[in-house]
Length: 436
Image (cartoon, rainbow, N blue to C red; front, side, top):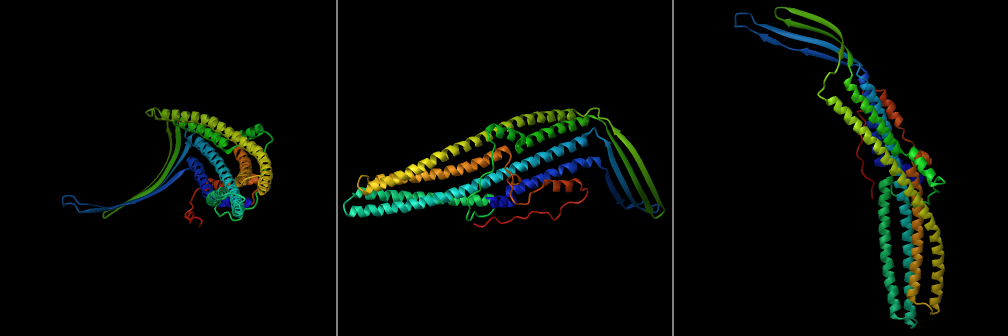
């Protein structure tokens, strides 16, 4: 199981895509912080002209050229830059929370696909054993028919039940093949020979404890809260459009004009402090504020919605776990009783007190009991991990998986301090899917 977790964590495309998405959101912070830094531009021009008037004046040619360096620094923009940075940081926190949620979903898929493969492998083994047992029953029925102990009807019943068991086995083998494919899709490698899974991690003693922890730490709830924080910063950013803007600008330029008759050059340096006070903006700024306020109200409602959904998921997973535990206990009793019943009916049939159909029915009941027990054991294990996921605990770090943990802080620190350059060579190549 741990190897499946590690492989999926490193190779699952859904998880890799989510990490790339967080990197994209990281860029919002330096993009917003750029408003605090100066803009510097260099300009160079060169031209040529030819002038001739009525043919009486000697023709003149000019070659104007100039270079300039311009810089601008915003000193105050109504707090829009600072609030944009705060909004971007909240966006990063929300994206990281969603990344954890994606990680949980992927790991739960790993558990589910792992247990589905093991369940279906056991189903196939039970089905094959059932075919073997009924084949023996059919041979015994033929032998007893040959000596007149049973009728042709008994032989036909055994033959029909054998055909049914073979059809059931084929269906189970088909389900196993599908579980293999699902496992390979999620984990990124064929299942191979899966060992018995380890005991699942400890769970809270009560449902109330599980719900309380989920509402406090579940990544979906945290992401919703960060979204609401971001919307508050967006309101402040929109309100900044109503406040003055102060900027310092400076430029240095040199130009010269070369001609056939004369040549001159001029150097210029300017510094300006410019203040802009918005008086009327056609109502656009106020509309932006109202829109941001509506979004903030929406985000608050989404927090309540997601909180309820998380609580529901915890309660449903907990109920499934409790149900599976009860079903396992009852299933074990059913298997034990069915085994005794089958053995008794078989012995009674040898004495002529039971028919072939009675033996076949007892075998079918035993098969059903064993199948139900295997399914319940799978359901309990998956439900336990579903509780962990619903609480926000299902991560590789929380499970102690031996794998290199992805740290989003590394990329954030890199791009946050980077003022120049981009990753020209960091292109993701398409890779062929895993071979069948």
